Length: 180
Image 1 (cartoon, rainbow, N blue to C red):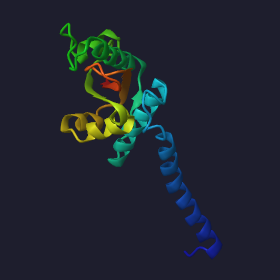
Image 2: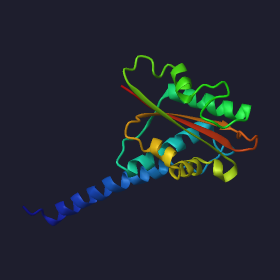
Image 3: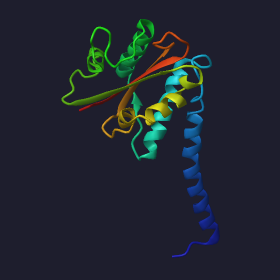
């Protein structure tokens, strides 16, 4: 069956629109990816970080991660602790692991099965943006594996002003999770 020229043009225009709109909206959603703690709110930086990580996941056909308030509480507290107490580790100074911190928020309560992971990073000046932190994680095999894990569905993102070394910049924690 052959469509008339006008119907073919409409179908082609619709296809172009459907392909172009998601790309444009993804670019717009990540418009704050070059922002820093000096130029944007933490909420804006969290959204830009989520956007950058989901752009990476979409390149591999993975579903987007969704922000989870309990994972975010664990991530925020850990970023703040690393900045205030001048350490950089997945384990807190009291010996608590990221699993312990996530468990304390109630995220794992009632789950029959679960999987969690964590990425941490910090940067100063232009290296403290969501784009720079995301790029660093994607260039690190272990961090990349967390970002691209098919099993993770949720994420918590915590960003603290300052670095564990005491300088200006930002400290990031992402806690990933899946509950079954």
